[in-house]
Image 1: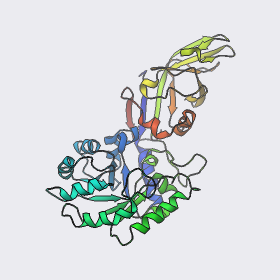
Image 2: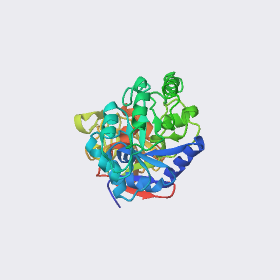
Image 3: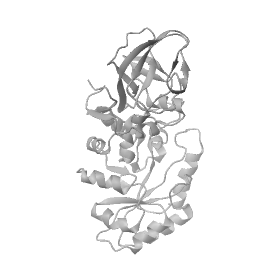
Length: 361
C-alpha cells in the first residue's frame, strides 16, 4: 500500500467534460487548452484522451515540442506566439500555429525566410490589456500579414475576455462590440470564448471555442453563479493516514503551536504537505475526506505531513484521505486559501504519483 500522495486522473470525466463543451457550443470547433502540463493533469496523457478536440492550445514552444515528441499530430496553437524570430523555423518544421499579438511579431514574420507558410491567429486587445494588438492597429496588421507569403490565407481572428466569469459585468459585452467593430470586413474564423465564455456567453462561441479549466471539471464562474451543465472533477488528490495518536485537552499541534485542542481528541497524520503541492497556508478547519466524511485540518501544514482532528471516529493508519476532487471540490479548498483552483492544480509537484484510469471514481 502506497503511503504517499497520489493524483487520480479520471479520463472518463475528462471526456465527459469535453462532451459538455460540444453540447454548449455544437457549431464551434474546440481548441482544447493544455498549457501548464494540462493544468497539472499531465499534458501528453490528456492530449491522448482528447482526440475529439479539433486542436490543442499551449502557452510556449517547449510545451508544443513535448506534444510532438510524444506523437501528437493534431494542430497545436502557441497561445503566446513566439518570442524570437529564431523560433520561426522550428515552428514551421513542427507544423505549429501561432498567435500574433504584437507588432514585433508581425515584423518578424514578414521579414523571415521560411520553408513553408504558417497559420496565424491574430489577436486583438479588446480590454484585457495583457496581450493583443490595439484595436486601431488590427486592420493594418491583418493587411500586412495577408500580403506576406509566410502566412497561410484565411487567418483566425481572436481576443480574450477579462470578466466573462461574471455574468453581471458589462465588460464582456463591451469587448465583443470592440472586437466586431475593429475586425469588420476581415475574413477568417473567429475565436473569443474561453471556458467562461463557453458557459456564460453563447453569442461569443463563433467558429472556435477555447476551453481550459472546464475540461478538468472546474467551473470558471464566480462562486455564486450556477452552470448550465454538469462538470466532473478529473483530478482527485489523495494520500493516506500514516499515524494516529491521542492528545489531552489543552495540547498544541504542529509548528508554532498554531492550534490548541479544547478537549481530549485523536489526531491522524496524513502523508502530504507543501512539498507535494498542498498549500501551506490553509487555515485550521479546512476539510479533507476520510471514508466520505469531512474532518478538519488542525495545525500548520508542514513539508511532508498535515494533521486532522478525527475525534473518537474509527480512522486508522492506512486509511485513504481525499484532499480535493471527487466529493470535495478543489474550488472549496482554493477559497479557503484565498486563491483560485487553477493555482492548486498547477502546483502539484513531481513527488506525487499520477494514476490514470478510465472508469468513474
